[in-house]
Image (cartoon, rainbow, N blue to C red):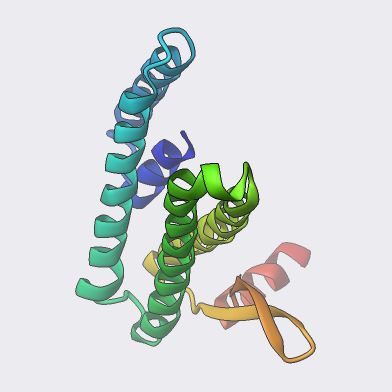
Length: 175
């Protein structure tokens, strides 16, 4: 259901359309929960999840690769975050499918654990990407940093270097 929030963020609706889109996505999410919990319509829930995920991949790919960044120097960071988000999530998805196919032979949970770990990392990279797209739309400089163990990169994060405009604003507030 978080995909509905991600869709809203990626759409970046105008102030007039935001309440309508929020209400519509909330209604869709509520219907999905009822269908899943009350009627156990797992196949429908999974299909709707899949459609939402496909939309996020395509729409974010268009935003990152086929529309120019508002600040041209941000394009590499946007592309890196997109690649991380969807490659890691995609690898996790492969483990999820393999888990369902091989569950009887491997036992419950072995590959499913990898699915959750990789889906979590991919989703966090998607959140960083959505934040980066918003920062770029406001002409802020962005970068990608890495949490590391030694020299091994583990998790990406969004860097928003301070700008002169932000420093000036802070100075004006203090005076």
